[in-house]
Image 1 (cartoon, rainbow, N blue to C red):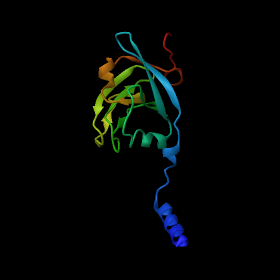
Image 2: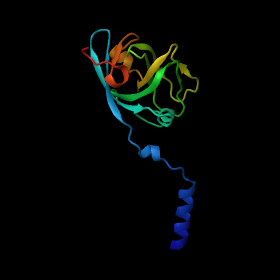
Image 3: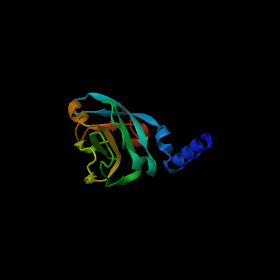
Image 4: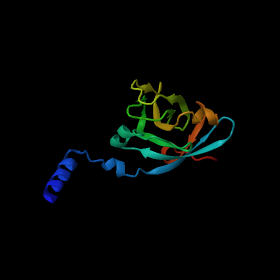
Length: 157
């Protein structure tokens, strides 16, 4: 009986996909957005830097804090498009130019929406935040995103 249970367990593990990424902890950084009214907003974000991390993004998450998100950073500016495949929470997509200026915000992207959402112009990064947070905080296109590592700027420069 014990032998049969071990074989059944081994067979289950053999057909269950390994989820190494689920156990992986992504690097986190703080980005600051200074809105046009002069107020600064801090966000603690996970980094999606590799193609695998960028492909998975915030898929399968069931919640996201108001001050959290994910920053998708790329080596050079280019037009980008994001979709919501397997993304279960609404997101605000903040498209950011290489100098840190917000080019465009797509608010409240619909969970699991498969039509790509384009940046409209070349961007260096995309910041995904909880849906509705940019409107709630008054963050708009033209506002500045600060992080020395990604945009070469720091608040106060």
